[in-house]
Image 1: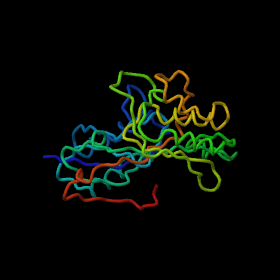
Image 2: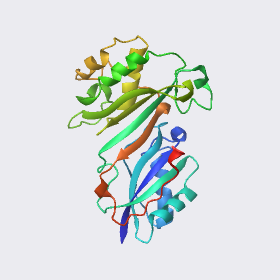
Image 3: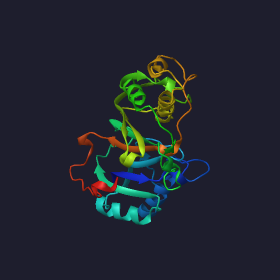
Amino acid sequence: MSRTFLATMQFDGTGFVGWQRQPAGRSVQMELERVLGRLFGRPTVAHAAGRTDAGVHATGLGVSFAGPDNWTAASLHRALNALLPPDCWIESVHAMRADFHARKSALSRRYRYDIGLDLAAASPFRRRFEWALCRALDTDALQRSAAALRGEHDFVAFAIRGAPRPHYRCRLALSAWEPRPDGRGVSYHVQADRFLHHMVRMLVGTMVDVALGRRPSDDMARLLARGDNQETSAPAPPQGLYFVAAAYPANAFADDEETVHAAADAR
């Protein structure tokens, strides 16, 4: 017999090719599945709430997998953190309903993008965790651009075109810029029912161009109305992007779930 678990992961994406297994390179999925296989004595597939690209970080990526029913959430939480490499950490573990899937069961996902506007952003202790822009931005222009994105739109202009999709519509419940502590710059916060490949980075890259005066102030609305991505700015660098959280329905959690939470300030 087995049971389904949800692990909430944090990781420094610097040394990874992204979440998903690749033919070459080190992935987060590979590291987690290696540890799960060692703990359970069998190959185990892990499913994430969303994929991250090379260099992208996570402070709360939901990952689901099936494990033997003699494991509890508490024991699994301890064992995972004992065996995972130092650039990965499990914040919490939940026991879930049998049909739970970290990606398919998610109601929404939230990302954050950090930009350093001060000169100290170029420090080696910061630049792998943010976009070291090191110059001023028109924050009013950033906010106007972000506000134009809220609601449901076709985001084909802000997606890398790959395999055909049924549609490119996403509903953004949150799209806003906020100042970072200690004058370190700004952060973009965005939450949606779904995201397209490179969507957040393309949104950020285009909004920054607006805030630098390289694009008209109302360009986000014009681009949303286009049927392609031919006039969209280049994606922002990956190191400023963080997968923050996924939201799940309350009834996805097992009635007898045993939850282990890390300190609230760990994020």
